[in-house]
Length: 377
Ligand code: XIL
Image 1 (cartoon, helix red, strand yellow):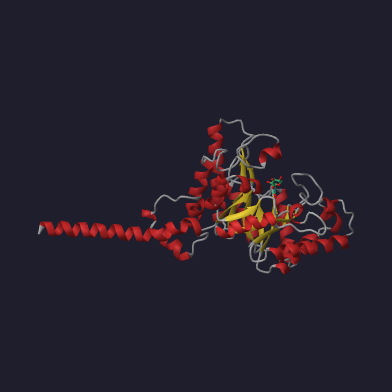
Image 2 (cartoon, rainbow, N blue to C red; image 1 turned 30 degrees about the horizontal axis):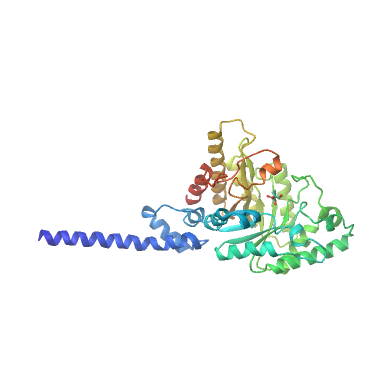
């Protein structure tokens, strides 16, 4: 009798163990290949939360969020991609959205009047496809990284409009169905970090924005089309200007789907969460999707001890993820790179910095864990 009940007990324990293992399988399988979980996966994941094994990567965390799954993206640096195997591995492992850092900008894709060069963009798109990642093209039009044949071409408004149409039709057509969203117009407001006047604004005038969106939409009606800007995260004057611009585009029927907030942050500054959420929310109320498109957090302007700065940095990253999840229309947080080994900040500020999630040796920083935990919550 006693022997029998022991055997029964053992059998039951084995059964329970087997059942728990089976219920974990879908989550484990999704960890490297599935970018966005379906609602049923999300329901399942919350049911199995108590026995969920360690979530391994950021994209796992994004897919297993208890609140809402958003994309976790990164800018991809082509030199690192081609020369650094660890970089390439982490890119596909940690993120489910890829934004080419530079190789889809006009200076690269349309280097002369009769050439288009998609070779490097194609490499990133193929990689993204193989790893189940979304691609957001960045960017079609900017003041910077415009080829010299345009800036020095002396074109008339009509000539430049013709060039613009041909360019957008060609690029968006080439990536049709492979690039799910485009940053069509980058940093349209007067002040940009390189203080260059925009050739588009100067020669064509402000309606270049509407033309660009229309032609992009014609070339790929499925693609989501974004405008993107920096320094517009809190409710400051520039954010108000951005809001007015987007509002007028929506009013006039420009086929714009979303609004990007770059979020290049600085630990030495304050970013009140409620204000940032309210700011995104007002664009959402215009019918826009919203995205955090280029997050990084520089340390160089704070005199606090390094440990403290790294923790403040982690907190700011966590807030960004939280803010995005709090706004229903926010579907992605993209970080402008992921390792301090490759970041644009030192080149831009002429000062060393560590603004990203992994250090230069690919060790995970407090910011990495903060992003992961925030995605999960
Ligand atoms: C930056 C890249 O990171 C650098 O490698 C490049 O030299 C200049 O552009 N805002 C943007 C991005 O919209 O395209 C910029 O990327 C960073 C600021």
